[in-house]
Length: 391
Image (cartoon, rainbow, N blue to C red):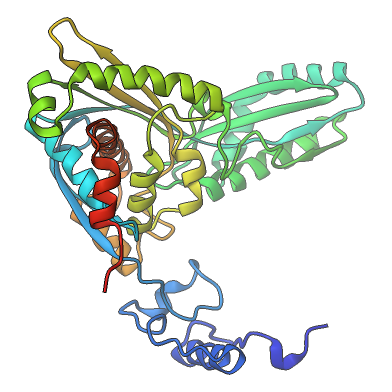
C-alpha cells in the first residue's frame, strides 16, 4: 500500500485553485522542482473538468502561424492561416513555403470522400456455424439494432456494419456518423447498448467483447486505409514546371522520379504512408486545436499519387483515409485551443469537415516543400539554420 504522504493531493473540488496549488506544493516537496512555468495559465481552471485529472498547470507549446494557403474545397474555401504547435524548428517555415507554392498556382483542391467512426465488438459462440448464423440474424434485425444504438445519442447515426467471421467468433464493425465530434466515446456508448440488446435476444450467444480490436483505436490498420476511420479526404494540385523551377529550384521530373523511389522504399519498409511526413503537420495542428493527439497514429496514414503530364507539369495528390478531427467537444473548447480553431473559422457546429480539408491541404503543402528541399539540397542546411537552439 502506498504511504499516505506519497499520495497525490485530492480535494472534493479537485479543480479549485487550492487543489491545484496543493499539488504544485506537493511536487515541490517531493521532487524539489518549483513549477515556475507549468503553474502559469490564462485558462479557467474550472473548465479543465472532463479534460484532465489531478491538474497541476499547463504545457506551453509554442504556436507558429503558417500560410496563407488558398484552398478550393467543398467546405474550406479561401485563404487560411494555420496555427501549428511544435518545438521542431523549420517545420512552420517549411509548411509556409509549400503553402506559398500552392497559393501561387491558384490553390489546392480538397474533397471529403466520407466520414465515419467505429466500435467493433466480437460475439462468441460454441462453433463456427453458430457464429455464421448469427451474422444472418444480425442483418435481419439491423433496423432494431440501429434504433437501440441511436437512442443513446442525439447526433450519432449508425451508417453501416461490416462483418468478419473468424473461428467461432463474429467480428462486427459498427460505422457511425458523429456530427462535428470525433465520436469515439459516443460510438462506444451506442454499441454497448446494441450489444446488450443482442445478448438479451439471441439465445445462442455465449458472450460478447465490446471491442474486438478491429476498431483500431489509436493505431493504424489496413482496415482504416480501405474503409476509412474519421474523415477520408483528398488534397490535389497541378504543379507547373516553371513554378517548381522558380520557387522550389527543382524540376517536376526530378520530383516525379523521387516519388517512384519513395514508393519502392515505402513498400520495402512496409509503411502505412508512402509520403514524406504527414504526421508533422497533423500533430502540430492537433496540439494547437485540442484534438486527441494519440489519434495521430491513425491520422498520419496517407496514399500519395503523382503523375507527370506531357507538358512537364506535375499532378500531385495525397489521400488521408483516417483524419480524426473535431470542431466541437473534447479539448476544442479550452481557451487557447478554441482560439486556434477560430483563426481558421473551424470552431463549433458544422465545421469538422472544413477542418479536415484544411488538414489535408496543409499536409500536401508539407509534402511539396520537404520533397523539394531534399532534392535541392536544402533539407540539412535549413534545419541547421532554423532548427538549432543557439545562445
